[in-house]
Image (tube, rainbow, N blue to C red):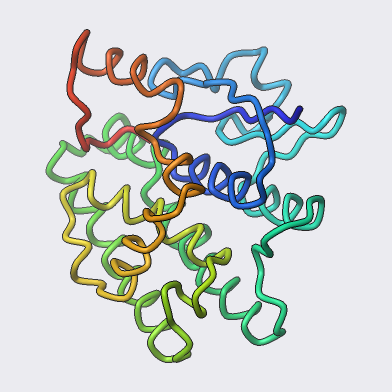
Length: 232
C-alpha cells in the first residue's frame, strides 16, 4: 500500500489526497506535524530532503512535490483522468493549477510566514496583509483564466474535476482560514461547492484526516474547536 506523509491542513498534502481519492487509490497516511517541526527531523529528511509535505512512497519509489505526485498518480492508476485528454484543455487546466501551486502558494506558505515574522519582524497583521496581497491577486487571475477559456461547468473545464480543481479547492480552504472572502471569486466558489458534494473531496478534507484532532490540540489545547488560522 502507498504511504503518504501529510499534514492535515497543508494545501499541498490536500491536493494529493484529493487526487488519490479521485483515483480510488488506497493509501496509508503518515502524519507530519509541521507546527512541531517534524518535517525537519533527520529521519524525515531522508524521505523528503526539502523538509516539507507531502511525500508519497510507492514501494522503493518516493516523490516529494505535489504536482509531480499527482501526475505520477494519474499515469500510474486507471480511473478518472486528472488531466483532460484534449491538448488545449490539458494545457489550460495545468496553467490554472500551476498558477496556484507555483505562483501563489510559494509566497504564502508556512516557511515564508515564519521568515516574515522571525527575520523581518512582521506581526500577525502584516502577515495577513502579505497573504491577502498575493492570494487575492493570484485568485483573481485564476478566476479570469477560467472565465476567458469559457468551458466552465460544475468544474473549471466542464463537469468533471481536473488538476485545476484539485488545486483550487485547497487554496480556497486556505483563504477562508485567513478570513478572505472567497465569494469574490464566484466561479472558483462554485467549483468548491460542487467539489464538496463528491466523496473524493470530502474524504480528502482537512477535518476528516487522522491527525486533525491531534493537530488542533497542539494549537489550542484539548477539546479545541476547529478554527481557521494560519498553520500550513
